[in-house]
Amino acid sequence: MSLSFGKVRFISLFTAVALGNSWGGQLSETEKPAWLEAALERSARQYEYLLTKLESEEHAPRSLEGTRLTTVAWRDWTSGFFAGSLWQLHEVTGQTHWRVAAERYTALLAPAQHNRRTHDVGFVLNCSFGHGYRLTQDPRYRAVLLQGATTLATRFNAKVGSIQSWESRNGWEFPVIIDNMMNLELLLWAAREAPDANLRAIAVSHADTTLRNHFRADASSVHVVNYNPRTGQMRERETHQGASHDSAWARGQAWGLYGFTLMYRETKDARYLTQAGRIAEFIMQHPRLPADKIPYWDFDAPKIPHAPRDASAAAITASALLELADYVAADSAARYRNFAEAQLRSLASPTYLAEIGSNGGFILKHSTGNFPAGKEIDVPLNYADYYFLEALLRLRRVRSET
Ligand code: GLY
Image 1 (cartoon, rainbow, N blue to C red):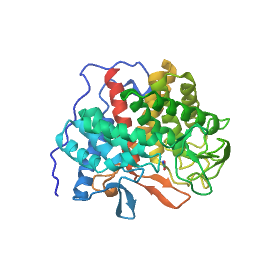
Image 2: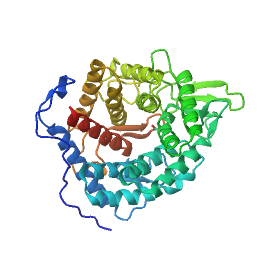
Image 3: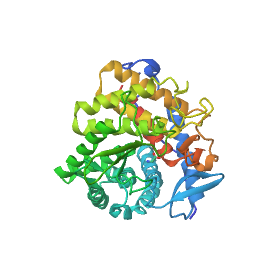
Image 4: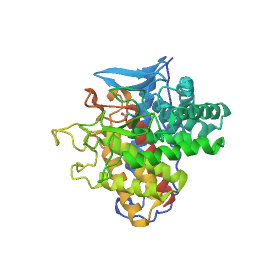
């Protein structure tokens, strides 16, 4: 299949009137932010290029191995992000060809709704079918999402008070990873939509258990907590993708920030807002955060300042901060938004934003997937692109309301 698309055109969310300065700093410009529009346009052009490279490929692009595109089927935790990016491009441009592509890459993921072997069913379905349903109201998408939430809930253990993230591995019998907070979004949506109070109770219990056991005094989190599934007792607090059991893996901090922000959105429980604020401060004030605000892959990585960066962690953080800003007082909101904008401006600079036709068709360069395993180091990653787009659209909406 050969895809040939016309010039990218964006729906303007802006009025021509001068924008006020309600949150100060870099966002005081009175004109539409040209850098943001340019970043969105470049992203769209780059994904048009990626689609032409994919042709009849039945799997979603994930990353690059050298110059070889790596792709993934519905079992992979990253399989929903490409469809999610396509839906977001459809939303911002209004162009049909993005919807056609999004529908195609979403449909491939339907089997995930019955996958009981991982918590990642939340990531996979929420980012693909979730956007699809939000934008089209197609009842078939709704049915897949509701089934996916029911499937995810089967991984809940009432003794532990958590959803089991992975099957047993590395000597962990019941591993729960900080990333799992992201999967609660699907549960909470389904709890409202079904409605099903049990799904909501599971999400709240999981968040509360994570709040109790994953965090250190400085608000950083460990990656993995292992439990005894028969007694509920906490066993080890360790890492899988971080530099050490005691380190602060950058993407893990971002997942926690995003996860507790969405828990506050859905429950209005002040404990979640407080935790999100504490994580935000840990990230924003970290002495080893580089000047461009794109973290090293772990805040405690060896070889800093020569350690690889993780653009995905920055994109997730920026998106989360832009939502968190909506829930706090004006001075904190301004700090969060300015920090997020600084991150996004860095990601939109030539250092991180790929030239059209380069980087295998992905939008961002310089992410790190799993450093300790020697996998996906300093590469593009589909989830970096997804959260970059989400954050740009969140910032764009804020600007349109200012
Ligand atoms: N959820 C896996 C990761 O963040 O790499």
